[in-house]
Amino acid sequence: MGKFYVTTPIFYVNDKPHIGHAYTVIAADILARWHRLAGDEVFFLTGTDEHGEKVEKAAADAGKTPKAFTDEVVDKFKTAWKALNISYDKFVRTTDEDHINRIKNFVSKLTDNGDIYKGEYEGWYCVPDETFLTETELVDGKCRVCGREVKKVKEENYFFRLSKYQDALLKLYSDNPGFLSPKYRADEIINIVKGGLRDLSISRATVKWGIPFPGDPQQTIYVWLDALPNYITALGWPEAASFNTFWPADVHIMGKEIFRFHTIYWPAFLLSAGLKPPNKVFAHGWFTVNGQKMSKSLHNVVDPLSLVNKYGADPVRFALIREMEFGRDGDFSEEFLVEKLNGELSADLGNLLSRTLAIAEKFSGEIKGEPEPGGLVDIKEISSHIDKLEIHEALEKIWRYVRSINKYVNDKKPWSVKGPELGNILYNVLESIRISAILLSPFIPETCEKIFGQLGVEAGGLKDAVFKEFKGKVTRGPNLFVKVQ
Image (cartoon, rainbow, N blue to C red; front, side, top):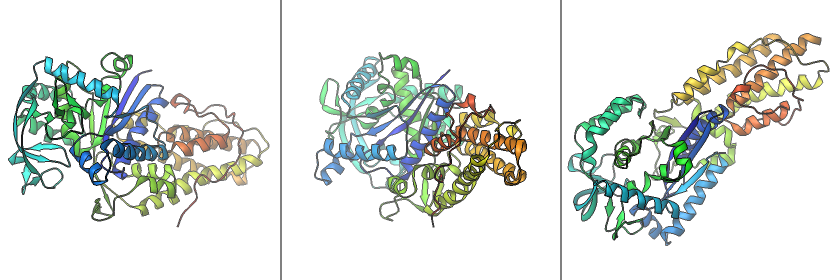
């Protein structure tokens, strides 16, 4: 048994979760569930980033205190993740007292190591991205990341000696080629670091909603130094056994817009603190909706909770992962979700179970035989795709197996066969369905629980995804999916 530590970013709570947030957390959930199937000891972390100017402003606009505002938004995230069947082990909040105390400890450690000093910052600042920018980083006078207006700020801050870690970061990337993932995103980060790093402002004097800087309560710790260490504070750094067990993280998963901060700032902070960087940082792409950029002004921001309420959790999880290469940009539409629900989920999987159990319930003979389509699923190949974070490819391989079971049924025509021959066919189909349900359980867990229930078998782990004696007692239940118009 190994260990596996996967994280999502801690999501900013200036608004409720959207489909992009859901995509990140579903992907992380699939990885966590797969590694649990494999017998690994897993820690899956998600949470919320609740400090900073953006939250302060959103709370004021809503006529609420920042804490009351963040409590309400956090409840929306937790409600959505529960509806999507997200199996996180811990939900960290940057307003947690434990996190606050550990962040102060972390900042003090960086200070003791000589990497923090006080100076004056003058330059451009993007409030939505909580990012300081140089003149060369602006595009038409606006933030190069989000395209929104920036403002000129001048204030006395504390700085982190980021420039000191330029060579160390380049060595990290060179020695660990999988650290920057997917590989095609590596050059951008490497070129930024090679181009020279400026020391980083890590406090604000004008923002009060945050953690007071150790030894200087007039300053508030800047959001990135408050937020990024959540990955270790949630493990109980520095003294907890869980930190020693799970750190370094196996993979941080996030949207591409925050890749830079996780691959430059975060490892530099860790190196300063004498800690190992994570093994991998993986950035996925952005969603468009019906071919358009998702934005409030276009009224096309997709609420994952409303989709779950309409179609169920598993169709949403399935549709988001099914055909978009994990890492690339993709497009989402409700029509695509319905197409997958009616087609692959209902017709391929649901109908396979229903028609098989209809025959098995009437069969009075012994369900046993020799495996016939057993070579059609290569679990090592699927596991390899998971290890390489090719989640969509893993699902494709499993679905080919589901289709092969359907083909086997169509070829063997069990409705026209009797006696031991039918017992052999049913054995092969029922065991194949059981195996496919094990492999699909990280992707559509609620559906697979229903399959195991109707087969009358225990769920099992990856080691059980092989042909065995069929010991189930089949009980045909409601259809797994209901087709929609």
